[in-house]
Length: 246
Image 1 (cartoon, rainbow, N blue to C red):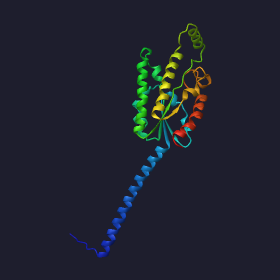
Image 2: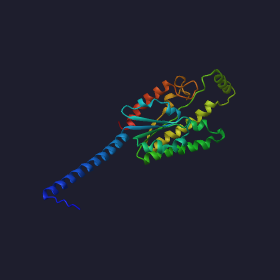
Image 3: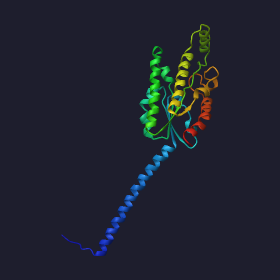
Image 4: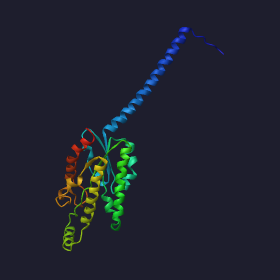
């Protein structure tokens, strides 16, 4: 075996070289960790998640808040307990600054009318749970009231509603809107109790009778028209800036 003897100066140079390389390597790792932390902080300070159903999903939310990245997590047809079930994966893991929680009308649409009280009790528990999860995760929760509906823009529906009113029978529109307004009042009270920002969407789109204005609704009477979203955007933008501390 060949033994290589190093002079004292060579040993010093080798030790210095190893120390420098280690320092560079550690420095690079620190820089990477710092960058990850900076990226995480930036994501939190500039991201808003919008969770809901088709009303949320149809919102052109890229223009919702200037300077904030809006991540739209609206899923067509979902009820509030289904939103709760995906809250951790669709909101918490994204580490946003805030979450806008909007939507429970499918709870009413999809409920057996004889069990509507039980359904809406579950709605309230789901809304409360989402607010709690957001707060526990350091995310600012923002609540929104649901919007009322109007009858389909078809002559059969118009005649049916007229006959129903003459017979003093509540229409399906009245049934849905009554429960929307009732639950909205509970959401307003929840916002006060939890001291969170409220976006009162019901009042933005409804007429004096509490029914969605025609020009703010699509022909199906349920989904929101372009003008409706424009009205919501104008209403929400300044309030979201305040809620997000912008």
